[in-house]
Amino acid sequence: MNIISKDETEEITKDVFNKYKDYYNPMLARLLKFSSYDRVEWKARGSVVTDLSGKKFIDCGGGYGVFNMGHSHPKIIQAVKDQLDLMPLSPRVFLSKPLADLAELLARITPGDLKYSFFCNSGTEAVEGAIKLARLSTKKTEIIAAINAFHGKTLGSLSFSGRDIYKTPFEPLVGDVKHVPFGDVDAIRNAITQKTAAVLLEPIQGEGGIIIPPDDYLPEVRRICDENNALLILDEIQTGMGRTGKNFACEHFGVVPDIMTLAKALGGGVMPIGAFIGTQKVWEAFAPNPLIHTSTFGGNPLACVAAKAALEVLIEEDLAVKSKELGDYLIGKLSDIKLKYPEYIADVRGIGLMIGVEFASEGIGGIVIPSMVKDGVTAIYTLNNPKVIRFEPPLVISKEQLDRVVDSFKKALDEVKTKYSHLFK
Ligand code: PLP
Image 1 (spheres, protein in one colour):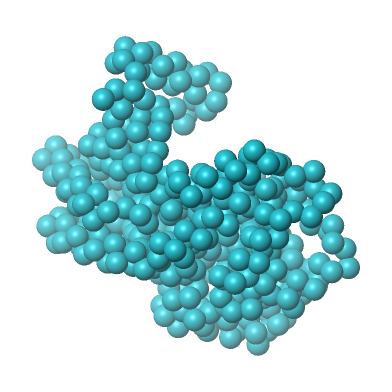
Image 2 (cartoon, rainbow, N blue to C red; image 1 turned 180 degrees about the vertical axis):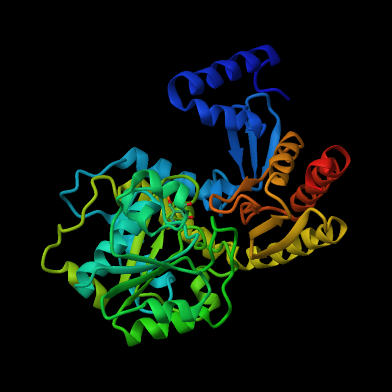
């Protein structure tokens, strides 16, 4: 059933599109049109986003890792509504119960001796804060990061990210950064010096194209950091909160970082919030000046109650276990499709519901994604690897919905084969 009439839908869609073109981001408007994403989103529940016309889409992009708990989870929405009536934002002079409760719960849920939290509003801010803390704590400056890493787009985080097209136009960036190939222990061993403050890594690279390192990589990096008095910072902004089949991806490898960054799904798909969490030892560096790192909106009551409810949902609904089961199911189905289209699909890989399909050439994703969107399924690119598209649906998705996704992906590949095979010879 249409939410509004067809004519009204068309009129509003045209108006919104033109405002994007005239007042927001003309190139993005064109890109959205090209990908068939030029429709107005209206409502979202669970794993389904509905547009203005009433057309439903299974959300396999999952907001790039935001909607682990699904869209508009009732428990999280209720927590935010209740807090909205009490006090939406904090005057930042008194003690805040939502903030204190969230900090305690995070200390309990995160692995090992991670204990103290700082709250901010986004992933990139969490990375900025983690790096500042690492520099303060070690009194050193050098950071080792990975090629093709993604840590955000503010100047600091961009400096640690690993793809030049996003970085070069803004140089000079933050200095004293070395980039090494991801997954290569020897590269870290060769790069690290007594001047290294921290090694900053995603446990599994997301925007780099869903890259899972060898099993012994992170444990070895942990050891090398310890030997060189350098900290290990793990960026779990995309991998955290159950996405990979564990609450936090570092748990697959039995590794506890000195500092962990979180954002995206931490807000339960309802509020924006980021955090970095560190051990007591590292946090001591903040002790002499409690105001050395601050944020006006970071840790606001609405975001904190959303995050606390999101963590509770993660545990109560066993989302990490679901992610593993459903991820194995989807990887199996996608791998079957790979066997049918070896000329177009180079690889299917993933862990939990963090899954990438690598095409044999770059242009294939540009046909597959719009075809799936027209068929009512959203899928997304990875920022640092144009050959790879991602499936990161809400962890509450059903097997039936995944079957629909697989069917749609298969239809899209049929379209590549029947209409566009000449382009990929
Ligand atoms: N770190 C990782 C691993 C990410 O995937 C992202 C976003 O995609 C970020 C940091 C940046 O987060 P935000 O866009 O909230 O600044």
